[in-house]
Image 1 (tube, helix red, strand yellow):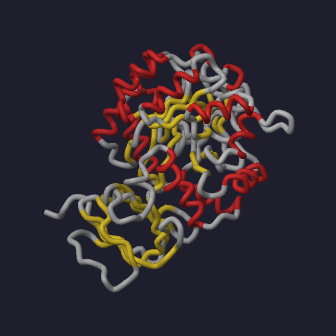
Image 2: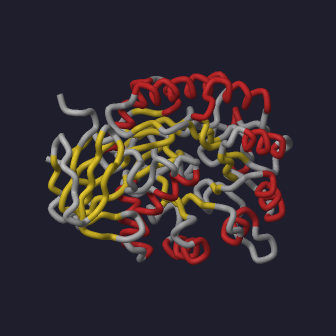
Image 3: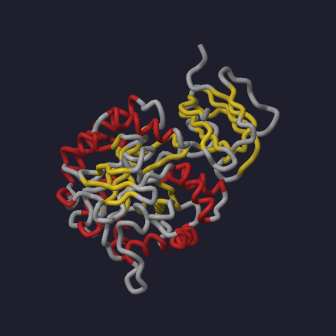
Length: 389
């Protein structure tokens, strides 16, 4: 019997993701054991995949995703997370962090429990890497597609119950720092080594910078659901653009953020501080029509996903398309676009020691793309979970 998770990928254009070079990768027992372009490629038992000059990249990591392939995080079931993971793997995503939406505490706990179970069991596709709590601790006026009935100030008892259930799988919490109790919540979350993001917030520049002092280090979907940039009140957007301590999420679909505004983000933050995300819904990979998000009706068209009242409500973007859009719309290199979709998200949620780059000793999570950045194969822990036929 062949060792589990063992594969050799030869003759690829390796995106390390800092430079692109010709070479071969060997994964043994789920771990990368060789990355290089010399004649010293070790022999390893297991299948050999000939990349034939295609891009070989770190597996893409999506740290902000609500659903896909017909499943939704708030379904609170293992089946929903399985179909999500399998759907994402068709687009080069090897790991994702399911995000809750604003809901009752009981519903949130149910979703967290399902995510925890899926992280242990696996999905047969992309790996569940943790939990992203987006809401309910958000500003009512900036709630976007979050249900108004459950928006509330931060609660330490609720967070402690979630932490007791999830433990270190609680990777990311998005909240509004101007709310009463936010400082205590941020400090408690940081004591658990949870990344805190500012999002769905009407915070002033000063309030956003105070949150950074308390421990917030990340910005949820830049420009969306936040106080915008004004020359006399820079708001959350101004703090995000000017403070080196913030990494920022970017939905690179050309709809959520205008290309000129995305260009501003790139100029201000550079390719090491931008994290590409999808913010996908259940409808990702499915036909246009009406879907549910957190109890709200969403109309999905070719152009966008919107509430019936007109507000944007997530997307049906894939990570592969986000990478291609970054190259096409922003003019970044393939290596930079891949970095924003692999290395940067891994670093943002504290898992870069084992994920996010083609490095010996890291997990064998790999994606293969053709010259047009269309997905060819996705490998999770050395196992092929998707291959284009």
